Length: 285
Image (tube, rainbow, N blue to C red; front, side, top):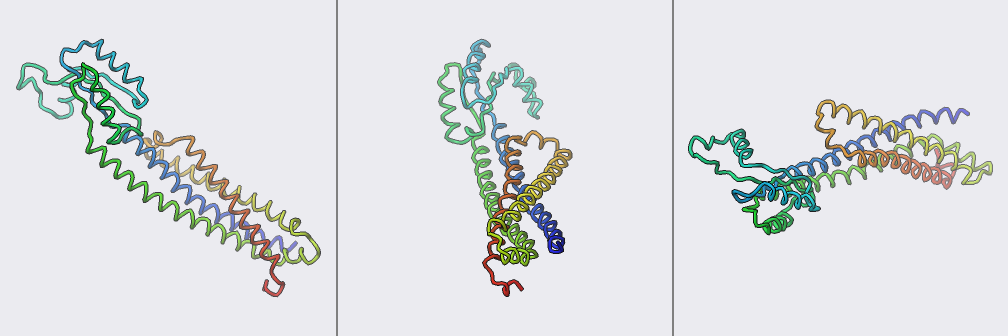
């Protein structure tokens, strides 16, 4: 009875320790997910400008827009008339053409936002050739240099975050394993006593494995609550983060945190119990 009482504080420390490292890993995972969402948002913000010939009838422009809307690479389209193009040009800081010219030099166009997977050099070139097949299209423009630099920077950032994640994942496993083994150290005499009175290995390991599942589940839930509080606070300070969060991926991340806590806790606990069962009594001191 006294041995069990002494073991309880160790379990508390183990739960706290596992919760902290899972929270750290979960926070990094959330940052990685946000990075992917941010990358997708930036890519989908890039616009392809489909410029049509002057005097093109509105119904023909609308027909081309309808064709583009059916393409798998198109996220959304918007028709911009000559007058709207001129108004946007002046609003963006350009000089008013009316001061120099007596006609509108700009063209009507269709602004096309693509799905993120198609915002790359090769896909943009193929899309440009496809759109240019229409006889009402005068030109197709897009910020090619911006796209190349953006993709390059996102790839580098992804590699860096991936390397940090793998390193931290390894550290987390080691920390949780050491925390559980330290908690089990206080139970070594109880384990050996049960073995000496004739208890089977399965009988001895079962209550510890059950306790490990509870500890892992509790640690996972605590870390998930902590992560949720951080996310809620961050979204309060930066409301735009709400648009970046993917509920499905965030749910997968949190479930993964709980499962990882349970799995590592059970494996480490079971291994520690078996180790003490194999040790000689004199080696326990």
